Amino acid sequence: MGDHWKREDASVVFLDVHSFVSFAGSLAAFLKQINYIMEFRIQGNPDYPWPQYSDFWLTAKTVAALFVVQTFMKYALLPFTQKTISEKYQGQERTDRAKRQLDSIFKGSYFVFAIVFGYIVAKDSYFFPVLLGGRGEARLMFKDFPYQTTEEFPLIREYLLVQLGYHTHSFIVHVFSKPRNDFIEMLLHHSMTVFLISLAYLMNYVCGSLLILVTHDVSDFCVYLTRVFVDTNNTKATVVSYSLLMTSWIYTRLFIFPYELIYWGTYYSIAFEEIYGIWLMGAMLHFLLVLHIYWFYLLIKMGMRFAKKGTTKDLQHNLTKKSQQAH
Image (cartoon, rainbow, N blue to C red; front, side):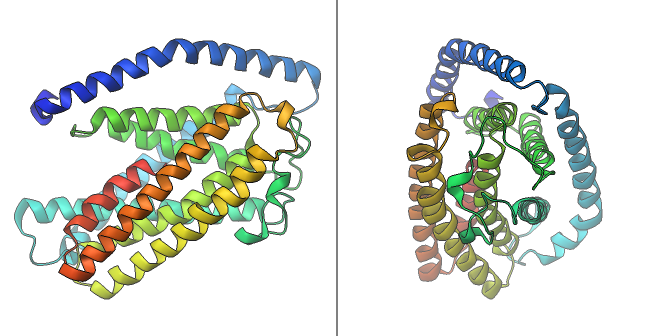
């Protein structure tokens, strides 16, 4: 991997690894306590269908299915994407951009599925807010916690397990991909994403987790939609998709996320005393909000640069990195 990394990145890699190792001890203690709480709550209500480790078989099946679909799309659509890339790209660069476009089609298609799946599951529930097209209120995301009833939305756990499958697939693909300068950084990112979704599932934070995932998936779809067009000659489609990205980012990540999810999930949670580690969850949500604001600033700069110079080079590069870091 050293062949692909610059020497000046070695210190950054060392700090990332050192931070992770330092965090591992406290993380192990935290997981031990989590397991104790799970066992305590199972014993407290033996008839309640508490999430089980065996449920992750659906996640494994989802990972396998995604690899099959991705492989099929690679052989079926790559000749098509090589034709849609702008003529100014030739040779290996054209092939690389065609593969990137294909990857964006794959991921964008998944997010369409995830958004529709999540909406169908929760649209009539008591916790899915009107601002997302539902009939409920986000303040009720922890209603009756920890033994929340799911009769109104019976597929919510399957939804979370499928989402976990997608992010596990992304983790595996990253591990076996050609290493880049940010390989360790993104490895830690994917690892923590898989860990947090798994933990939220096992601790039965199902309603809040669905809201967070749906809120992010909307703008993630727009990210990949923009990436589909950014290397083509279709400037109008690029501008329209970028406009949708900015609009969805403002509405979901800068409005709904802080004023609905963070507000009712942490500050005024109706199950504040029952949520183990709520301070940690709140801190992570606030940190994510800061990143949303920073990324939005970068998106504005990219759009302005594109408007002045008419080039999509920076737009493509930065959208790639934002889409990787957004989850």
